[in-house]
Image 1 (cartoon, rainbow, N blue to C red):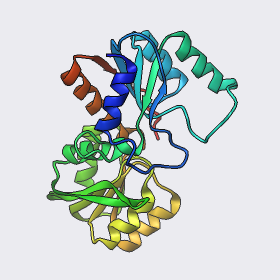
Image 2 (image 1 turned 90 degrees about the vertical axis):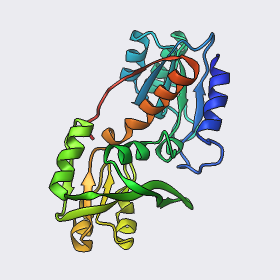
Image 3 (image 1 turned 90 degrees about the horizontal axis):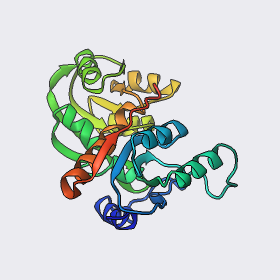
Image 4 (image 1 turned 60 degrees about the vertical axis):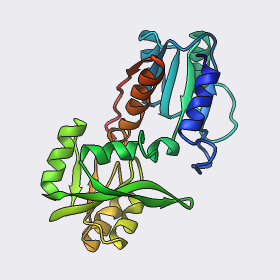
Length: 249
């Protein structure tokens, strides 16, 4: 299977053409290569370090959440040139899926987090561009502090909790989606989980009595690429490797 065939499969699997995304995001095939796909490097972010790690791991394709093409047309120079020229020289293809990966009902980042928390009664949640990009659900009663400990154990990284009390209902939108906290509060949810937030979200969480859980932009978005990698291995026998390069954010 070559990269064009695999990209077509991923386009359909992730519903790339139908899902609205940030105007700056480009979902789908970003860099073509030649020959059949032998090994796919899975990463949250496309950057020079993950490119080099993928090459060292003998990957000839990368599947990432945050791709290389953001912000429209720009000259191929500086750091951008370095990435493009390295990928072409090393015959390393690139496929990127942003919101389509966050919101996929089986392979998505939010579904992975919901599974880690063992949520039940799952429903779409979190409005963006006229679509629901997250998940809400119910879990066995647990304290906010207990939830923090559980998430740190699952994600292997620090988790910040703002607020206290018992949590039974929770909304989830991975990454940098703290503004959706207001929707969680309006829905009467006990807690809202995302990756990162701003100073004013602290006061919003306290005043609305909705526990805000900030588990890290990077950490909340590793589940999707791993799930897609597992799916490709099962469906096509393609080797995959998760390239871990945490930002601490």
